[in-house]
Image 1 (cartoon, one colour):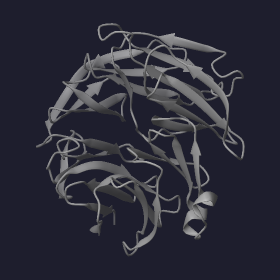
Image 2: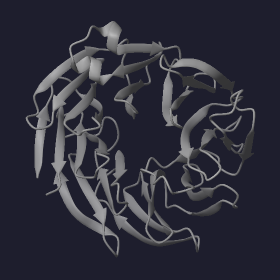
Image 3: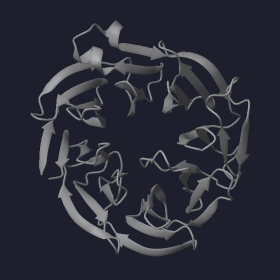
Image 4: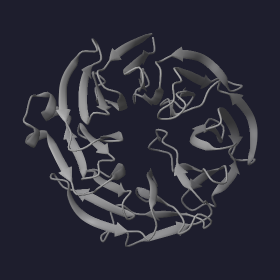
Length: 349
């Protein structure tokens, strides 16, 4: 079943509340909106200190707004929805141009990567004050948590110093003081990227891919990384049952890969140019928005699944479908369409 939430500004990204009763929508006009999922009605609107590029859900009902050039806005959604003043629910951390943030440990600390100057900052305590920082010599392209029996680790993905030089994957303990005091590095990828798939707490593996050399990589602590062909122009990769991976390519293909045998098993034509993809929590369904990029006009989203891998269904989700997200319980999914100015809410029966 699908319903539509209509907006008066193009949506940039979406995130769902922990109880899945409220949808948060980041818009191009620099606002964050809260919509009730039962009715679609707007319940709150906040003006942010700049235009953001993405949202990240954090523990304790917080939202991080990435890409703001003046700092990292953190929103306490409970205070915001209760009608508190901006000073009570909105905090701006001095990390300019944040490109990602992840939580680690209990109580959690937050690791924030900046697109400006290869900066990684750790935030801790009730006030989320900076208590550690690393400046890398090359730009950070992403960060990814890696659960481990010996304690959580963080993968920091770095570009090379020049386009022809390999980037690197730095593995560090996010709890170590000083931050980065113990770390290791692996270099074999020109443009390392990490899968954004939900990861089970018991998993000690990460899935990486290389956009430049079209490789997908199974990465784990204490084992040699496994490289396999990924299909042309990979833009997303997801773990698949049976020690396999599905790679979504910018040319419009889904590629099924065996990590064990390091070979391509099958390809599926998607029927359009993908702009975003997301894996369901159970790891057996991938939604791919075929918007054609940030300013594309594609209006469909396909669902990949099954054995053999195939398109299970095609959904109409609005012109410019460019962001797809799946709620943690897997019952709800969301597709944001820029040109249509809508968010399509997909519900499993």
